[in-house]
Length: 271
Image (cartoon, rainbow, N blue to C red):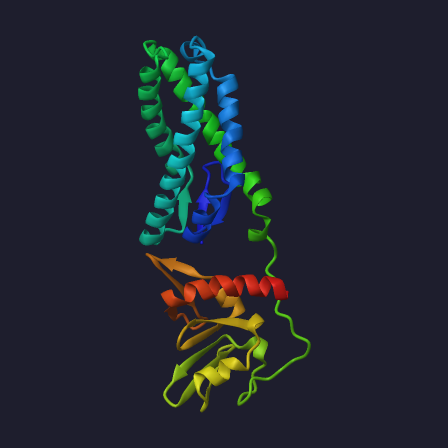
């Protein structure tokens, strides 16, 4: 996860998958629409106010669409770039102000096209400054308050594994819920728990079949990791990986990403 941070100090966790899904939701569109309405009602531009109601409505409808869809593209691109670079923090003002600049240029051209006056430079500057402040405030409100309200599942405490009793992993003295990871080895598997590793001369598939779905996830054809590790995926460029307690990092196979999302849904239901 990357921290999407406002310069006032608030932040929310984001990754490419979450951003791609959230920018398509009606909740986010309504949030943008609210601030578009505030801008339309309270903007300081006398030039825009002097235009006919029809021209003003056309200006704000097109402006909303340009800003909303433009921000979606820019935000996803920014998160993709930050993930590729391995950044842990992405400042929200970057995507917001890039969107403001592009929207300002396009809407200036559209205003001239439909006959809204644009000759008073000071009026344009006031209008642009008003919207910069408004959308920075909107971004802060979203990060500090709205995101938690619209997507509460992201902030819910992690459900704990469902265990009716303590169970030992066959062939070891390790309790199943204390196993950190299991990795395939020649003629068997290596099982690690609390810094200790043992070898079991059994096929990898048979060993992980003994483990309940709640306890962990197979991120690769030869690696199973405990739930506490699987829920803390890290990013390095375009790859996602898990870092195990001994410091080694193992990438998640691309073919396992859909199964990972299904697993997340399954453990929430079971818990």
